[in-house]
Length: 344
Ligand code: ADP
Ligand code: CIR
Image 1 (cartoon, rainbow, N blue to C red):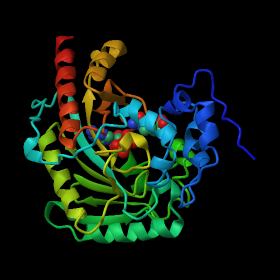
Image 2: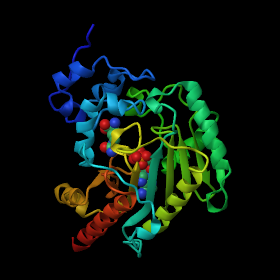
Image 3: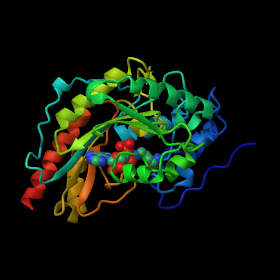
């Protein structure tokens, strides 16, 4: 029996709604990957959450080929990456030119760069079974607790974590929130909180989220706008972790992630920046961010609002650009935003 074409609100503007034609649906609706992830699971988040920007999640590496008639146009639209383009990596901190754009600390509050990674040979989060999630947690926690020097720290499982401690970590922007409705509908919150946790060093400048949207989110962050130091620390951490954990990687799409927006570098380089004057005119604000391929988020992460003229500004493209270019995009845009704020 064939499934019925999903209903989309008249004002739905997700990439799922834009690219899921009746014809594509009829070809894909009953497709299932070898690990058991269905096409209907892949689109569920965008069907349930009509305000999605994208609306689809991959459950494993095969989702990107089996569901390509839908995923490829979404990837092309989001990243500006066509089916003949190739992805290449550059994680060399010496190639980055990004001196602190705000040495007097008037605008930039903090800088954070993260990459998503998933474990080779495993399904992605939406397709993971509980024992697989637990085994990933054990493998990653073991690898992390062997780190030394600036990267040395401890792993804290969410199971049994004190509520006050957890809420404080979230409020301080170090830990992911519970109950995200987009992840919920993608099946990423199954068996919550088992298998999830956070590793961090003493200063909380190096952190790793385990089994959130991706199996690892490797994060480097600190106060102020020193992008070069934050990037160099992140690269050092990635290099150390990949000595003991093999990551899921594809020659065309780079690092594979559950959300197609994170493919390629899986990197989001952001600043929390105070722009009280520029943000009064969102059209001009967006004109500058669009020019530099940047995304505006609120200060409590994706799908949150800006507060007190403070926003999270980050690179939008992650595929078909190198890691150095991701940070370079963000740097150039932030320089332009500060310049405009000063003019106003
Ligand atoms: P992700 O970076 O994983 O895509 P979110 O947008 O949900 O996810 O952000 C995760 C957390 O990181 C949120 O608490 C957010 O406020 C925090 N964060 C993001 N960028 C910065 C930054 N530059 N400084 C401080 N915290 C940040
Ligand atoms: C959505 O579709 O809105 C969510 N699934 C999140 C998409 C990823 N965010 C983004 O635009 N970078």
